[in-house]
Every structure is written in structure tokens, then in C-alpha cells.
Image 1: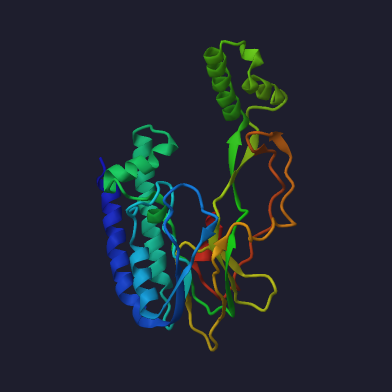
Image 2: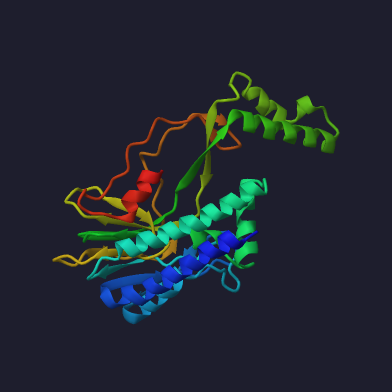
Amino acid sequence: MYEEIQGAFARLQTALQAFNLAWPDHVVSGLVWRLPLLTEQRTPDILQAERLSGQAAVDATRRALAEFERDLGQAAGTVMRLPGYFVLSKSVLEQVRQINALKDEVAAAIEKLRLELNLVPAARPRLMRRALGAKFNTKQLLRHIQCFDGSPRLITFTWAGHTTATGRISVAKVRETLQIGAEARASRENIRIEDTPEYQELRTLVNMADTEVLTERKSVAPHPRAMLWFSESSRYDAMVHANLPVFVTAGEQSPEVMELKNFDRNARQAKRFDEKRRIEVLSFRDLFLPSKKAKAAPQPPEDIASTYRESLQKR
């Protein structure tokens, strides 16, 4: 039953082993920051970032690229992160593309089995762990490596502290969830279904069609990110989640680097002044009417191939 997942994972391991043998020989410069593992599903107020350079940075990265299992004491649902960068004398873009494609194959094999078993999407991690091992971490396994065939003039590492993730959900699905909740509460508290908060929320949706789609917003835990400038523009050309080090190629000049600082919840920046204005539908469920289409994300110049450009095309 799990052979396809296991086969895709074995091919991924082989590609990663080959990559980890190759890229360190081409390192010109680089830095990484080791972050403490979270022991609970909450980011503490202070996170110390341990700066690593030289061989220590290379060794930590080789381990991080192939580390797919939760460490001792690491809370479920959290991930190991190693933000950083490496400037290489030789392009590794094709190898990184192959690794990312193999990660997608693992994800596709998991999804195929889920559909065959007629399970809900939330079952994907369970299938993955049954196929590969009880401690395997879905996010660590499937997250892509970012690589740029170009030399940035500036790389800036910061903490994203006010990020939200958005999803889409149909009004029909919201109605179904509220109806189930209303019936359960009425039975549990021995009250009329019309007196439940869920029923009142249902009434809010009375003029909306089942086919309409709402935006569901969820807060994302603080995480490190990297911004890269290749052009002379004042705006960055790429911004990536710094889960793993970014690989770039060497140019005539070494990039200027603004290093990652410790995370301090009380000292973090205020929310962005240009945050999108959203029309709220259900105030206690973070459900909104879809906003206008966002502006296109910045991209590196056309002559710089990258995994980042490809990931934008898949959105």
C-alpha cells in the first residue's frame, strides 16, 4: 500500500546524498543561524539565533537538508529551521530542481493514496508517517530548497512577526460546519437550535449563495525570511521563507548581508501600514469576502533562473 511513497522517498534520499557530497566543494562564503527547537506549539517571546560560519555552517546545512524526523523534545507541528545563505562558485540549480521535483513526487504519492482510501486531506501526515516512520515531519520533508543562478547585491534576513496565511472556503462548507455545530450545542446545552451562536451566524449568510467563496485567514507563527536584491531597484527582487539556507552563485562582488538578529516579540516591528483592508463576514471565524487581486510578487531579472521564479508560477 505504501510502496509508491517509499519508492519516491528513496529516490529523494539518493538525490540529497549526491547533492550533499557536491555543493560544499564550491562554497565561496556563507552563514547560517541555528534556531532552538520548539518544545511546544507556541513561539516563545525570545529566540536566540546562533551564528555559524565556515565548516560548522556547512555541516549544519548538510544535516538540515536531509533531516525529516522530529528531534527529541521537538513539539509536533513545529519545524526545524536553519536560515542562512551560501555563495557558490558553481551553479547547483539543476540539482536543486531535481530535489524539489522529487519532494513533489513524494507529496503526489501521498495524495494518490489518500484519494484511493477516500480519506480527508488532514490524513496526509498520518499516511506519510505510516509509510516512512512515526517521527517524520511533513513540513520538513516537503519544503523546497531555494536556489538562484545569480549574484545578489544585498541579502537581508528578518523576522516576519505579523504574517497571515489565507485559504479559500465555500459558503456551502461554512453552512455545513455551522449547522453541525448548532445541532451539537443545542443537544449538549438543552436549548433551542435557534438560540445557539452558530445558528445566529448561519443567519448572517442567508443572502449568500452556496457557491460563493470566502477567504479564511489564519495567523502564521513568527518565522525568519530572506529578501534578495539582484537589480538596482529599491524594492527586493525575491522574498523567501528562510526555512533552509538559500544558494546563490558568486559574482564579481560579494553580496552585502544584513544578518538575522534574535527574535524578540516585544521589540518586533509594528504591523505593516499597507495591510489589506478586508470585509468581514463572520467576525469570530476570520472569514472575509475575497479581496481584490494582489499585485504580482517581485521577481528576479529575466536572466536569473531560480527555483523561486518557478514556485511563483505554480501559485
